Length: 345
Image 1: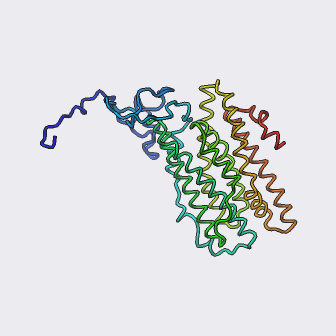
Image 2: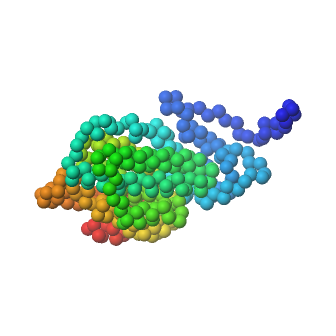
């Protein structure tokens, strides 16, 4: 070959010739613009039988390709409406935890001891949460069939988002003057449940809809109780990422219910189990007490009373929004079936 005697058989493979163009020149060439013929995702079957290799979807697959041994080859386990759009949004809305936060301004603020310690404890909890939220999608990336290209790419952006969240919460904790506080055993047992899910579908339901849905409301609440304007900006940035992850989870569940309504009871069964674990972490001492102190703005008796009132309202809001999301996905009956809602009532 290196003497100039080329084989060139790869040039004659029977291929569908395409020349994809951006539908919107200002937006650029997106995955949606590539949804053409064998290269597209719309006509992908429920079960991928032909490709078990690393070959990109649409490529000619000669004999002898290695078996990737993908654990997930069913579209219903991973697919979501607008998955290609979630990826494009993730790529255009990246931000930098090093330069996009006014760190110098934050360091000039001297927080009272009770507020500073409570905030450092909240940041410690959030760092724990985001570390597992990074590990879970990263764990599944290599287990998905290569034909699920758009999903794998989206999950890669999610892992990057969550790593950036862990980074920013750690940086903020170490810039408060108090450092990282105490890890939570109760919280970590609940987080372990996310990591140990038996299937991607179960992991997605518990992570995207339950855990991240809970955290999205938590971020909104944390912005409200943040001690400085710089901290409020921090939470606004992480919220935009979290909303995208929750959006994927909602559109995945909606896709499954639309295409496989017979799985409804199985989904309820998994929600029963997951609600016991995921929501338990939000009631750990290391989580609730910092919320109470921050929302009440101190440790005096009247501050604690106000903090308890606000934190109770937050927990009700958090739970209510969870059931609202499930209703939008097509599970309006979940609220009445759930022991969690009965406990809240």
